[in-house]
Image (cartoon, rainbow, N blue to C red; front, top):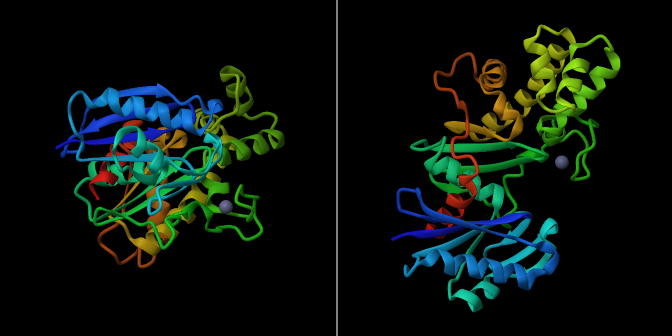
Length: 311
Ligand SMILES: [Zn+2]
């Protein structure tokens, strides 16, 4: 039997019918149109479910949503970019479609998909780190997502790696997120450009019309000293957080996604070296956590939501 996964985002609601092998067999999407309010969002999801049914009855329906969700009560506790605050989405969708949906945080369900059918397929355990605007995380051990007592676990981005360091969106200072998300290399690059007016990074920023996570990596490729320094600093912080993750969970796989992960081996090769140097028992252990890139892309959100419904 097939499951339905829904990825509720600020712009679009994506839905996919997922078979037991974790593959999408058909998909569709609808605009979220947040401005029309919670009931209209529920209407759109209901229409999407009906559209994808095509005479089939799903074995289960799962939904990934940004922010904090409570799968026990069926409530979206707070998803600020969707304007959903204490909204009983399960009841709203039960009334529209008859399905009792399972709810998960979008980053967590995407991690579940990567861990079970993507980069971590067949692995004992996997940690997924999304190096985006923030630092999204998911910890999956033996096929089960680590949710903690309240469902809010796995916020690895908010462990402090630099006491009294850069301010974080969560209110603390020096969080892993503040040093390893895609916004961190932008901040480091901007600072380095101010210090080194002769750096190649100025020309690259002009060529691309923007300073972004790629600027320093491109400068490093051109042999620019300041760019090389930024990349080194970024990888140093990233390695610090990743080593903590290794020391706490020792997962078989740590998989990266998000803008910075597009650097591929230019990021992963020096990162592996640094993590192996720092990890507990690193000089003696024979098995290391495999540091790789995610493989499912945008499909992870939909597949993960469907997998949630199977649990
Ligand atoms: Zn934080």
